[in-house]
Length: 174
Image (cartoon, helix red, strand yellow):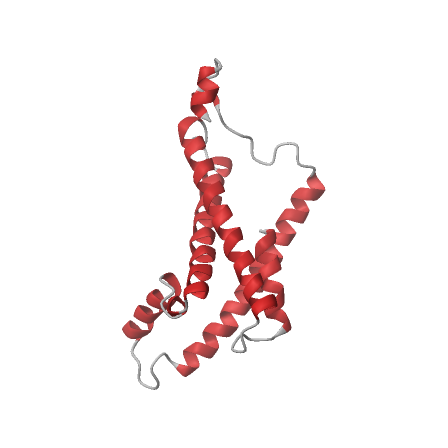
């Protein structure tokens, strides 16, 4: 995109985008309220599941802190348990890596918008935009795979709680 703009007489260095440009205040409020609701629901679910898992322990009674943290890294960051099943492993990895990149990008936008740093322009902006769009698409594909698995394939081992049915549509709207 930058090369095409330059060929048409533009300058890559000037490429950027304003944050929340031309967005009415009521939509900004809807954005932040929706984000807070999603974060609150996610914290509730993660806390509930973490407490339940912590009580059980990964290998029974007497498991040390180091082993618990080691298992957390392997099970959460590297998706060890779900990677055994190909479709579920790919689905979870798409959601995980897409979400991580989107969260990191939110931090970059925060630094640009709410600090004196001003760096979201030019080649950096173009590279970031391409990366974010790519991983955002990967995230959405993962969510669609999860919806397909939960609502069409319906494996017996999936939890059927009503709150679990809310998570995927909420993540899709992010």
